[in-house]
Amino acid sequence: MRDAVLAAQQHVQDGYRVVVDVDLEKFFDRVNHDVLMSRLRQRIEDTGVIRLIRSYLNAGIMHGGVAAQREQGTPQGGPLSPLLANVLLDEVDRELERRGHRFVRYADDCNVYVRSQKAGQRVMALLRRLYDKLHLKINESKSAVASAFGRKFLGYSLWAAPKGAVRRAVSATARERFKQRIRQLTRRSGGRSMTELVEPLRRYVLGWKAYFGLAQTPRVWRELDEWLRHRLRAIQLKQWRRGKTIYRELLALGATAKVAQLVAGNSRRWWRNSRMALNNVLTIAYFDRLGVPRLS
Picture 1 (spheres, helix red, strand yellow):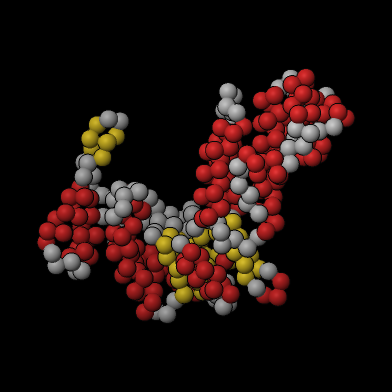
Picture 2 (cartoon, one colour; picture 1 turned 90 degrees about the vertical axis):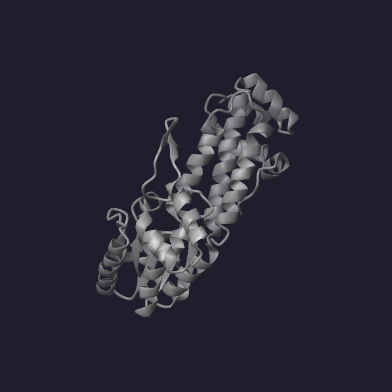
């Protein structure tokens, strides 16, 4: 994944700033078994291995507790599926290489980088023909020939920095999904202590941070950090609920009587109340002690 994102950035940096962004419709569900097996026979001489892969593809799936026969597609999440995808799509890669195109592909996600809209339309037409031979369908609503700065690839987007530099960023879609997931993980916090609440958050945030470690947007990391701590402060206030409890807990955490009284006096305004004065009590160091990872 890292190599694909870095290659995409380099192509755009080299001046190929129009992208042919292709999304294959339900790729893993629609892989044609006969087409795939014909490609595998061209590479594998061992008939036993071929039979084993065919059995893997034909294995039934459970739907509503009932076994259903699989006539197309590969198991999503299966260890063999990404490898089979590479075998099937290899001839597309080879044709793009033969024509000298700049492109990156990761599993079924493929972006081709060109210098003009007209060239992009030609490449899109070529890809339609190549995928049609493989019985694969392009999702027209999610595919486009567009500016490389307006599309996302593997959750990343690119932006033009000063002096012509091209930088990597977490796409707006990925940032919103991050927030949605955090809301899900903290939605039902009743009955759980802040320590218990933080543990699933910690695992998710660390994994998310590792995946998007290539991002070159410190401001975005800081904003997400601030948003996450803001949400946790609001949740902590909601757990304390009553003004008297808030006042007592804040004093125990080292707040002045004036600050504790100010926050406790607005005890029902969780989100608004979790800003300003409360930041000086439920500090970054406080969340560090709880084990909340920092993004920035």
